[in-house]
Image (cartoon, rainbow, N blue to C red; front, side):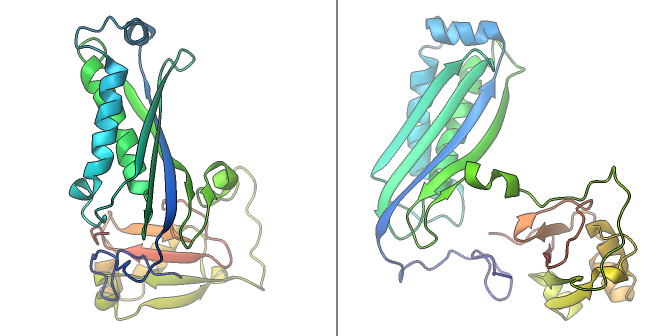
Length: 267
């Protein structure tokens, strides 16, 4: 399993060293939306809001936020952004405002966090300006839509949408018996857990689990002895499958890479 880049070998938070990376053109686009009452949206469209031009103010706020990202997100690098573009569109079908934020630079690290921060703060600004007339607004759908450039190449959210979260088994159908072959999966422990348990990786088989869920895996591991029970008993234990955060109900598949983290590891 690939190591999380914001954790060192001891599981401690760090700023990643990008000094050896090549300078390349990098772009990222993030989005958000804010749902509101139709009357609130109409007020924005008509420009009749007593606080002024909501969309223009949110646009400036998003641009400023992108430039302030390393002051808000502890492990982000200060970047020389060459472009920040915020597009806010009124959409009566929501009803609400769609926000797209694009950041660009020539540098040694990506700009996904800058785009996400810009979209988030633009949405928060819309909320702040309109909360006096509509306190039930909902900010949602904050995500990276695409990134271009860098060592990992281009990435598009829609191209991988079906793989965005670990796939769970269909619980409405009877569970099939796990095949006797190809049933192995790996379990990794990070940060303090690795030191507390004295192990960083286990190779296990699904045939050893009465039910192949993450919750059952935790139960089986806790049953090993008092030490395992003590350190895995925290209800806020963080779990990931194939480098994506997962819920206890996730059904483990052959070949999965499961990771456990203490509640706070940084990064």
